[in-house]
Length: 80
Image (cartoon, rainbow, N blue to C red):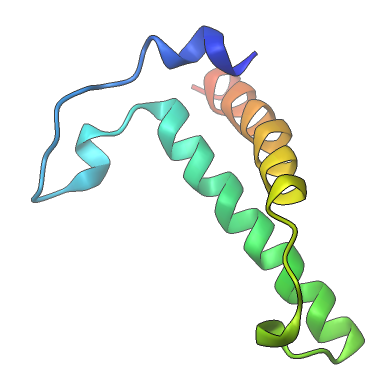
């Protein structure tokens, strides 16, 4: 589903305010990354493990971001 929306990405850059040059889809990807990091942090806190000491699995995080992005994007489109 992500390839359908990639064509709508903004290509210009704005150094003063990067959010103005981002598409909605890009903002949803960043929000998904934040969710992934917070999820890992919460699990570390529950298990009393130092966040810096864990071995992150990039492919698992990418899969989470991909699935979460579509959900956030759909919610953003339907709530407008």
